Image 1 (spheres, rainbow, N blue to C red):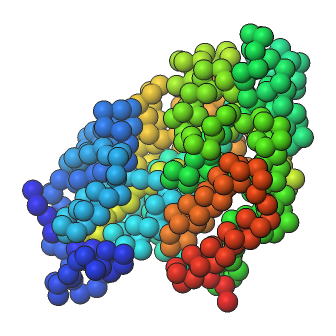
Image 2 (tube, rainbow, N blue to C red):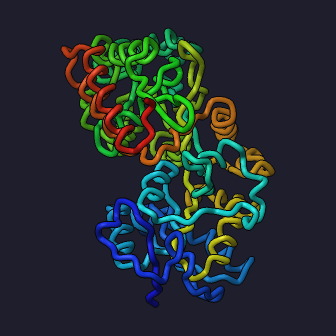
Length: 442
């Protein structure tokens, strides 16, 4: 069934011709049909547990409301395929995607603003989660349905063998990383282990994504607010430089990060931990089912990140529901968003050992311990509540993440580079990026 999906001006404007049938923001005049099926795209592997979880949520939503939902799972080239549909003026009704995609999709005119008064149970959404769906001007264009934050996975058997305590600060963290690298924690008589697993590839900005957990805990930053919706680079501040140098020393001096880290994204990095080649890993809760099966639940533990020079701030992330412009069933869009954040929707999407799409609940009334009694999930929930921090909702976070990833990767790959000089170059890049987005401080 072909439906007209007009999108607004933005990155795709040159590829599209908007007709006079839209008198305001894209799609506001689309003829409404509350019985039209809702087309939902979710960014996950087709046939995998993510698709199973989305289907489970959609089925429960249909049963509760009567609206019909057609689920499509796409992982490879998701953004490209979405733009292709935009060019065809036939966007899906709903997209479930990373929270960090808000700025890019909004700047392309793909989204419609969300009226929270029309979203059932929106008042139950956790404040920091709700804020993650707001653009620079404070308008709501995304609605969180799942949250997560980083915690520290440790090979418990290695730690106990070497008689080490759970790290409480960065000195403890570095000491454990070095011990796991040099003291043969697996007992095979070979020097074949590394203290820390770290995905430091430039692909999709992984190096920046991972390093943010350390940068923010040190009091540093990539960019910082300068008032009135403007930002300025912060990578050359004392705290940022010292965080980069400390992290760099783990790899360049202590050799405590896995070999080849600068070429690895998450899949091969995950393998180093489960194969017993690395002993610590800073990561979200989504890998628990996998590591329980491949490594064994008794072999590793989940603990809060140790306190850095400033605090224990860690990266918070999650998935958001986006209501796409041009839908002919806006009532259905609102109903789905409301169900996804409701206690019923959250519990439905959290159920099961593998096929779930909600990591940590965003609904204040849902106690994770009642849905998942495993105390490790409580550790993650506490990290999100106490220390989680989202990337800023600027018009487009992707180029900032990519530029910072390129620099972090270069500094970790070439130990001869000058840290301050390289960060100075990055400062200029970030200034240009912020200017291009119209949010640079004067």
